Length: 267
Ligand SMILES: Nc1ncnc2c1ncn2[C@@H]1O[C@H](COP(=O)(O)OP(=O)(O)OP(=O)(O)O)[C@@H](O)[C@H]1O
Ligand SMILES: [Mg+2]
Image (cartoon, rainbow, N blue to C red; front, side, top):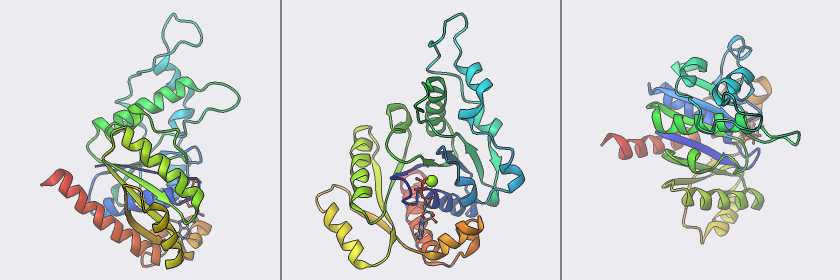
């Protein structure tokens, strides 16, 4: 199953992606977690050892690799291969994490003001496509905030798109746009998940807002100060306190996804 996690900045994408990856791995699924955010903090939520973390270079920053794979020999500057060979990259650069899970850090695909990052983007996009279409692990991608990552190639092969909202109209605005775009790109299983929910009045406002959407609220994760405590210490929330409110809720959410996986693939 290929799961993508998207939403506005700071809504809890990394918390959800990382905790789900740990739960699938704990259940003995082969899990490859993908960090596609330039901030690269999925490794904390997963609990990658510091000495391993120190050795990670995001694929998007591997200048020689990017050049080798995207260079068109004999062509001038500005010409590059938009469909580079990538199939060997995940196994070569993934690192080990807890419960037997693995992590591949792609880095972001944003374009800086200082110039085009086209070859890097081509490599990362092709890699995402390859990961979604070719691999047979449970793949969980922590996307960067926004919608830029969603294109025809990157959406292909996504089995489940998790769209994370926090109780704010701004975050719901973006969810709506992500849902509409995901639909257009042919993604069938799109699930809206609320995070950092403090009380029922917030849930009610969310319900009102999504009333005429074609997607219901699939799950709701409460606000939980233990998550912040874990972040402060730099340890995965699931190791900090596996019984905290948010963790118990994400475990329930995981149960639903596992059932969905069985419906989609195992029956
Ligand atoms: N359920 C929750 N309860 C309390 N705090 C939370 C909860 N979920 C996330 N947070 C806090 O919100 C912040 C953002 O969470 P996280 O990094 O998972 O979001 P993100 O969407 O990945 O952000 P970014 O867009 O920056 O990558 C963190 O400080 C985290 O501790
Ligand atoms: Mg994040």
